[in-house]
Image 1 (cartoon, rainbow, N blue to C red):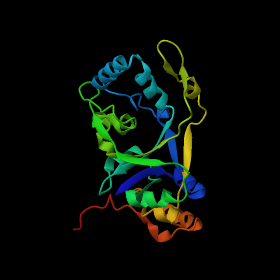
Image 2 (image 1 turned 60 degrees about the vertical axis):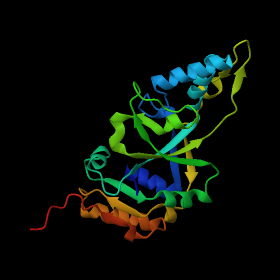
Image 3 (image 1 turned 90 degrees about the vertical axis):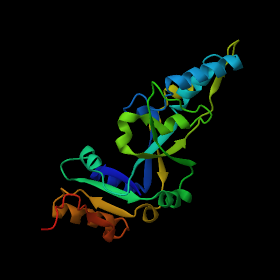
Image 4 (image 1 turned 180 degrees about the horizontal axis):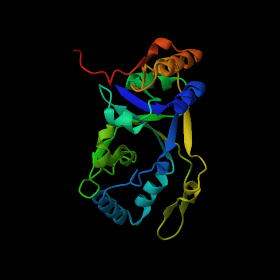
Length: 237
């Protein structure tokens, strides 16, 4: 099961556009997004020396940070207290519930993009080694401080053709992507195939739950998909 905790505005955006929004990796708050640990960087330097092209592979990684876009989900078999708190204490947030198969089926026909999917692994950037054999691997790694997110990522690699700086030591010219104006990509989805359930915050008032049902129905989905979270219910006496 995959969960996406979000506010009303983002839910309405999803319904009205029938798209999943993918944010460019370098726009994320964490500065370590897409970076390699120290041991991996040492391996990249060795490979560059063998190729006689210092800085080329590391430059390619920096270039990719302007071309990789991510849509993030939380993997769990149950609701998360931390995620409810993180995405809104006031009671006006929601949680979409789906599965990887649902997402795959929802994207299959609608989107023009190739979408990759993988679990995020949490590493120590001072001690751990991350494989340098797959260019997407560092975008499925995060610091261990974020392990509570148990994140599954959808990735889109939107690739403009890079230029190569000529000379005795050729390098990838990242200027074509460093100032890219594209901060995000929207991928079309079939909403009935995407959404298994919509849980409304356990702190939400009754009228708000009814509003979410009405809005959901307005966009052609069954209002029965919507339920209030029972997370705050106490034991029976």
